[in-house]
Image 1 (tube, rainbow, N blue to C red):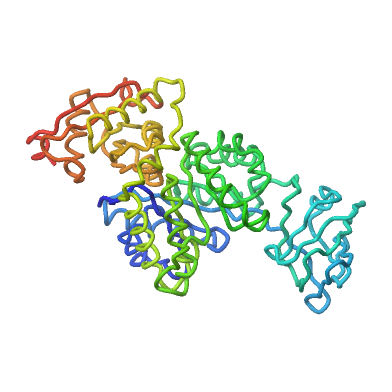
Image 2: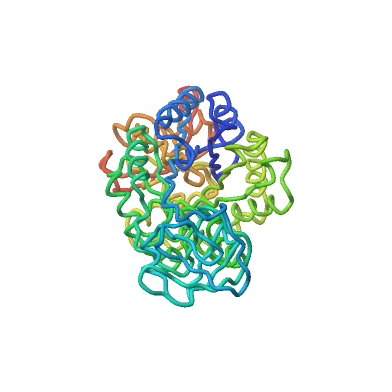
Length: 478
């Protein structure tokens, strides 16, 4: 099954889509990657979900990527007398270490690391930003604030701290257990929430040890200030616009989205744009015009993937949501302005042999107007590098590793195929042409670019590019 687009689609599984039949329908509608949200999925059901997806993969004979999204720390206030209180604009309100029930004047903040990190002038947001407090003074075990945006505060509402770097790891004990369970279940990608610093990503990669690739969710202002460092250590990033829009002014989020996408493309790292992309389709069979434009903007920017959350997890129209996103991406990529826009964001290749070969294959494909670039790859790095160039050709990634084939399902423009490694250069060229015909990307008489590393099976050694003609024999073998 081939897609008529290069941008990939992530669909979150949930109550509306957690059986094999629905997963198969979502895949047919256009989903390339399935997200398992560990905030809602019990750990003991993880292997069952993975097995469902793998059964769909076997049915369609196409590699499917699975992303396990770790919950991350949840910062919350304590409980109140009468379950809540009304805060008035301008009043003082104290966050403290006292465990007694809260009142209209104070509440327990069960996070000593926050109380020790707050400074005068810092903003404290409660309940997704519905209430805003400004820190006036701090002393041991408490912080006195002034209420800037008033309203009702109630038990265990979430706390966001856009100005404060908190000395807390991105992974909780729950996340560590979920991470081990996800790796044991054989997921392909791990998404890490609450990333503030590159060390957060390094901690997960140390545990993963290459068993899955790690995606940093960029949802904290602190992460944006260290974007290049985080991008360098991550395998991919996600623009988590929901939390970004809570912790910083909403009008800044579109610019930050573009900055993240451009930085990711410069580094050659996959980038996913997420949150509220087709939000109205949770309850409506059609999206708003603004939502269509929002998805289209991410595609025009050259994002590797766009993601559905509640739309496919708990919405009333999960299949329609995936199909709608699929149609938007297809239409944008056929627009006459698409390539001129996407190409303006291309970065200069790094001064390495592998990057030079990837850039050369792109130039050859453009010059000769070739439809297919076949990349023989063991680790996937060759396909990642070619996709970074955003060629106007399909990238067929041929790999003996099923793990690599699945991981590449997230990457822009890559159609991955698991096959045995090539025995020699002629075998490499012949089978590349055969697969190009079999998958419907090339026909007899076409030329195919082959990119590979010599000697075969050596990770990271991309050093060869070749042009081969598709013959009648290749078509017969297909």
